[in-house]
Length: 190
Image (tube, rainbow, N blue to C red; front, side, top):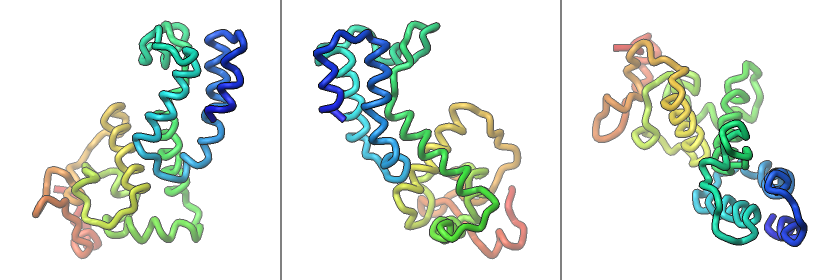
């Protein structure tokens, strides 16, 4: 990514042109891998630093980064935020995983989430990823955390009933509860 962008540093490109190049050449190569793998926070930070270094020709930022991410109407240039891109790519998996098709590749996911009811039920719960009792792979943990962050930030998923299972407010030995036998008998809400 860095070498392709560095070729453009010597050219006289506007800030809008650099923003477009950052999207087209900078992160386009990373999107596929980032959509299927966990991306460490240090990796996300490194990519973002390289993108801003390209934008400002390896000099100090002239405009705050939070402003650069905003729309032109709000004083920004809609510059790419790689952290947001990674979160969006991971959240897109929820739609695929919840689709009604019975694809064989969902077997691994179903194995892990059956321990908590299932994915759809878990997304309705007041869970905390750290309190879930499971050997959940890091990718699924991140997926649940990103969904939780989205749910808290937007408030578009109202809580409704107080669900007993996978609830961060109801724990034993610092872990949330899920008793399959009770769940199967219909004990779900308090």
